[in-house]
Structure formats: C-alpha cells, structure tokens
Length: 405
Image 1 (tube, rainbow, N blue to C red):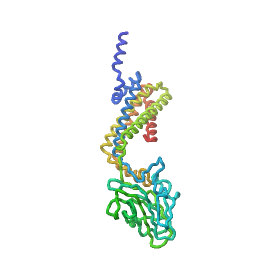
Image 2 (image 1 turned 180 degrees about the horizontal axis):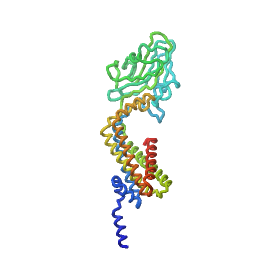
Image 3 (image 1 turned 90 degrees about the vertical axis):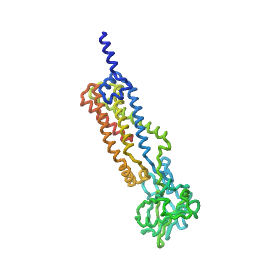
Image 4 (image 1 turned 90 degrees about the horizontal axis):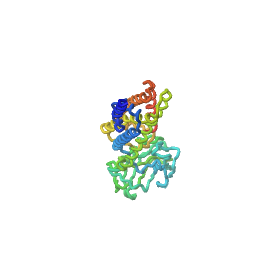
C-alpha cells in the first residue's frame, strides 16, 4: 500500500503544471496530452487564448502601421449612403443659360465610391457648355494635403470631341481662380466611353489668377466645339484626392480593441470547430471521448497559431513596405479595383510567399499535434486519429477564410 501511494505521488510530481503546458506541448506533446487526459484544466487553454490574442494584435498593429488609406473630398461614408456627393445632386451646380442639368440613373460608373447615378449636362444647338460647382470645402490642395483632382467624363453627343476644354478652381469668388488647360487630355479621350482623368494640383501646368491652393471653394468645367451642335456630357466620380493617412495613428485604442476582439473570435471559432468535428468523428469511429480534455488539448494545440503570428510579425516588419490603399482599391470599378489590387499584391509579394509556406507548415504541425491528442485521449488507431484531425483543421481553415478572420 505504501509503495502504491509512493508511485502515485511520483506521478503527480512528474505531471506538467497547467501553466507550463502551453510551452511543453511544443516539444513534448505526448506527455502534455497524457497529463491533460488525467487532469484537464481550462485555464491551460485560456493562457493560450491570451497569448494568441496578444500575438494577433501585434501582427495586426504592424500591418496597419504600414497601411495608408487615401482620403477624399468629398468624404465617402458608404454606411451613411454618402458617395461622390457632387455628382449625386444637381443643387450643387450652376451653369451658363444654355445648359440644362439633371441626373442620369441609367448611365454611371459602377463602383461603390461612385454611387448609382451620374450628373448630366446637355444643351441644344450650342457651341459650348460651362458648368460650375459652388460652395466647395474649402479644400486644402497644398502639397501636404489633397494634391490631385480626379473625375470621369463621358461624351455622348455630338460624335466629335470638344476642340478645347478647361478646368477652373476658385478661391472665394469668380475673380480668384486657378486655370488648367484640359484640351490635350480631352482630345485623347474616347467618344461614348467613360474616360478617367487624374489631374495633379499645385504644379506649373496651372495658371494662377489670384487663386489660393490652401482654400479651394469652387470648381468649373468648360467645353467648346467649333460649331453649334446638340451636346450631352455625363460626369461622375469627382474627388479631390492624393492624401494618404495612417488611420491607426488617429485612433490607436479603437483599432487595438477591434483587432483584439477579432483575435478572441478567431481563437474561439477555431477551438470549437476543431474540437467539435474531432468529437463527432472520434465518436463515430468508436472512440470514447470527453469534451473537456479534448477542448483543453485543442486549445493547447492552437499555440502553433501563436507561433505563426510571431513569425508573421517578424516577416511583416522585414519585408513589407508602406501599403497605399487608393480610391480605386477601396471603391473603384471592377477593372480599377483589379488593377489596384494587383499593385498592392505585388508590393506584398515576398511577404505573401513566405507567409503561405509558414501557413502550410503550421497547419501540418497543428494536424500532427491534433492526431497525437486524439490517439492519447481515445486509444484509436493513428489512421482514424489522423482522419479526424485533417478534416477538422481543414474545415476550420476554410471557415476562417470565408469569414475573413
């Protein structure tokens, strides 16, 4: 009896303390899973949860600190239904007496930043149109603020392009303005197509007639034809742009909180999906399994994703340059978004390649650990333990991709 008690005491001494199981599972998983089978404690998985959230928050912060989002004026608020406000409402515009202004819901640029309509300027038997956007801003278009103006124009009628075109930017009143000759760009445009224009601001191509780049309050377009024609011109997506801002610096606490909450959800979703699928399959295979030790083991297995986050954090620090998320990426048309996405992917290419290999290694490692845990907890064959593990890890990975975590 004394020998038996001594043996039990020795086994208890050898058992890995719950607060060290997350470390030992990395190099002695079999021993840790046996310990969990004998004495499962949720606190072991909670420790891994804390580590995972800290590491995912660190990785998220590093990526966001390198991410710069293009600001626009007018500002876009998709949730509030505010897009390119100036081509969504005719009341912003005035024109020469011969020009009519209306909205066109059937012909506009498709893209979340461009809304569901364009603005239409038309005139009958006329050689020119002049349209003015008033009460703008004021907008700061100095070198350290918005440094370009973008817009889209479609020439519907007549069948010839205008022979001259101009842009005016006003500062206060009509006598103070900056002038840009748009003719060359217009003559290279296509008829009956949406043409994209991005005009750099505050450079030598602009003629200054008393205007102030720091205070732009109005904008006007002028188009001229050599003879009287019926004119119809559509305009969409007018934005002052070119200013990129790192948003995490403006609300560090808010972003860190969001990243941390997403990390908690990511961990819990993976834990319950993996443990749930393994539980179902092992019972179907005839194994006797209990939820608590299985959940604790899966929680410990997810320490591999903590390792992945640390590796990715180092990779991001060393391989990622600044990432600029342009208007086209955030809310452009399908073709604009595809081009902007390709450009971003190219900048992050080295990081993505290495991170993908790391992902494969981590999934394989986690699957192997899960297989060991299944065998320890149930005594089932390696094959049955591995099948349950592979399916569970793959399903959890696919769910994570689908919901964007």
